[in-house]
Amino acid sequence: MQHRIEQHPGHRGLHLAVHRFGPPTEHVVLLLHGFMDAGGTWDLVARHLVPRGLHLVAPDQRGFGASDRVGPGGYYHFPDYVLDLTALIDSLGGGPVRLAGHSMGAAIAAYYAGAFPDAVVALAMLDSLGPTRISADAGPATLRRWIEASHRARSRPPTEMA
Image (cartoon, rainbow, N blue to C red; front, side):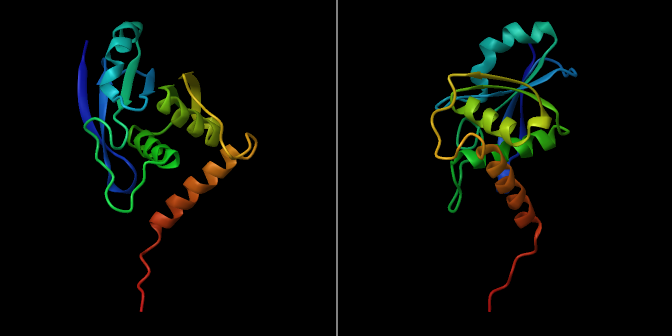
């Protein structure tokens, strides 16, 4: 089975190591790992899915595996992982996407799917979400507004202080 590792842009200049399993096909599935794992941990799953014609893309999340660590002023919050996922999806040519996640990765996939439901073809979650302080009705729209505001802020020129 073909397995290669590439570098892709994350959010705020971070680079994500991305594991690709199998030859490129039109059936791409993004696999998001759990806490204390990395993208390469999907190799046993890949053995069963690649022969079925799927191309698997499994990033090492920020701070995990061979991906960049966050420096001063950076975060390891779920919305930042979702921003990294949006950057990765853009670097792969955009959506719609198929997402599968385990634990922390399932939460990231669910937050992305909730904020961008039209961009997700399929979603599979294993051992995922816990309670949140935002209501289920308000959560997706709140996350989407935050991501869009982050993109707008990044595109503005820096403000010089007197």
